[in-house]
Image (tube, rainbow, N blue to C red):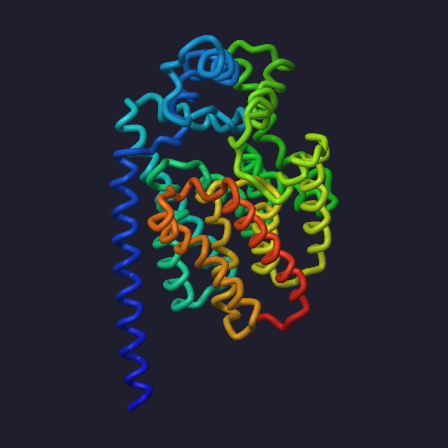
Length: 379
């Protein structure tokens, strides 16, 4: 009797989470048709017209001019290649382009989930539960509703871990376009101690830079430094980028270069120490945590917690997995609940005291998982 009762409870539970995930997905798609403010359509449009968008943003939107060609928050803070990839979307009007981008983002999400399931042989129940929790999460809804570029970055970021061949290394280099995620993949490839793999992964950045220079008629040396100039401008703006624990050092007079290289050095050290970890899903989860711990992130980037979610559900019997799930649920769901009580929007949480709290939680979670590496986890 009891096994039959538990089976019915299980069926009801999965039915409820699937319904909730479906509602979340439909709501996200509807929001994308109305919003998609972060989809970098307008910088790609400028590039397609032969205009260097980095200089345009600096000189027009934030200079003496008053830009009407840069839409919403599309400030172009990515490497050259992304805007080359997005040019086909500029052949459509804005309203149609953002609908198509929403479709592609859903497709990227499906591929991410499919590749993870295939690589790590995730059981049906764990896969359904992790997929539904992911689709119900605030970071996922922001990615779809606001047209973010994190899903496509995450997809390419995962490929070298999934397939481990030259093509996946080449495509993985596309994730370098979004600096705060791609840099940890670059560090990981460097730790493999193969100059050929490093060079292959850098090809998309190299090609993107040359094509961008050609299309915008910008000297290649000048074009090379333009993304850094734009990034430096935004780094100099107070309260513009999400805070990390390292932001506190700025208040006591630390040099900006030290603040830049300190988290990079810590990221590389952690990733280097992961070389001997046999559990590939755990290794991937920790590398994602490295990015979330040591780089600035908005809430939508916390989709990088997906591998840790799957790993923790698989190894639920361990205490560290329960701690991981509490942290994941905080970022996936609880921050949205807090936003109703405190009158914030979800994207406000990376700033101020909440930003320091969020980043501290990530760093603590990272080192707790590193400390637990010797546990006898399921493969």
